[in-house]
Length: 210
Image 1 (cartoon, rainbow, N blue to C red):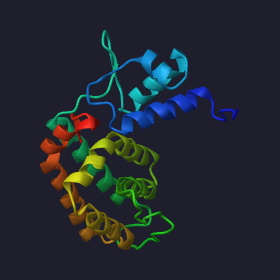
Image 2 (image 1 turned 45 degrees about the vertical axis):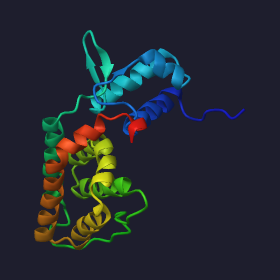
Image 3 (image 1 turned 135 degrees about the horizontal axis):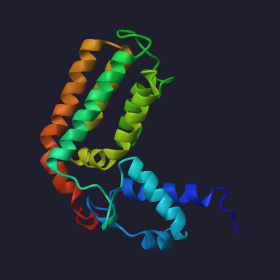
């Protein structure tokens, strides 16, 4: 039998996080620690530790008398997340030590699209966080990547030209031109702010209905 090379706490945290990012658990749904422990072949203690860690990342909410549940999502809250994402990316751009209007190597900074468009988008935004040279800015963008992951997965169903949109965004980052970057980022986020009602509706649908 192959031994699990990862500490139980690390394994459980990673497994529960994958479950949440998959969209399997609907917004506002209760997370039962005992059921999660059974599912992931673990005791209650590492599961609770994982849930508390995910609370800190904004992927889980803990309320007195209610236990753990996924964040409730409304049009207003989703728009707030998109707006905050845009602000963080703009701030990262302005903090980039290389300075604006300087090209970067797309391979060095992993700006190459792959089959998974959501992963490519998150990599692009994480790159902007790294380029800022500010750990707090990079961490905020990484957290937003996780909190918007399910919505971004659904975006690919709503926006048939999402791949072309990613190409435009990555090109503005690669060339380092401030004007095109600002315009592309504004267009990207405005489109999602407009689509918030439909995205919220889809986020509340069980996977079996898709």
